[in-house]
Length: 281
Image (tube, rainbow, N blue to C red; front, side, top):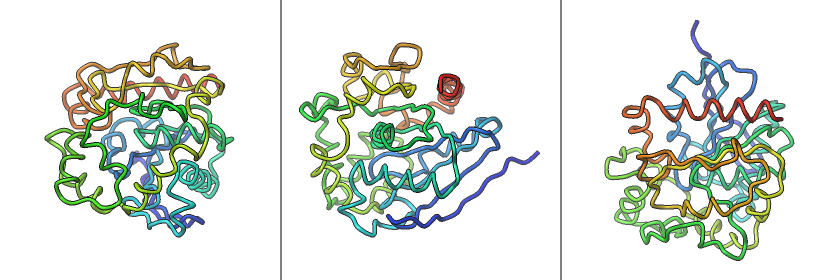
């Protein structure tokens, strides 16, 4: 039997949001991408065997991909603003219960959602250290190429260096196009407000009883993996932060390698996390 697949636009107070969903499972999984990227980074998950058991919902954040730019950039282009857009999207799609997976910025949005999305039954993050307000830099390794994530205006070299740092030398061309498409204002506003907007993410991770799974690439050069080990998570999946060996960038920065050379380790890893989260809800 063919698996149902839909692509559509949903109007919100933040602008129009492009959504792709596939699968017939009872428990939806909301996939949230990273800064200046798009739902296209989840293409391998959407094309995997996961939709045989789960309903996957991927969307472009405002200012990204096929979604419109924010109607009010100062309102939308913050962690709390992106989280509010996700809450509105879930409500408009009549989703009563949901697991959230967030990569990079998407994971930070997911942590923010722990305060604002009553439908959330579990969260899985990758490349998203739960940061406290006073020690933002401790969660990252400080690669100079990644500074482009905070700048409004980028030239071709900035984009090439950033994409290579995140996705590696074999990055597919569409990833550069997505970064060039992204509304530069979102990067500027997001980082200007990072210290005063939203919840204290470390405190959230250390107090929220919503099940939280942490899975990172074992050789990630962007985030400080040791930082995760110092967080006293309140409800951590299987009691530990996972590091997948052989991944040299953000977990979703090497999807081709994961899907082609590691026997679909990512879908296999994602499924048990979702099952565990739903059982503990």
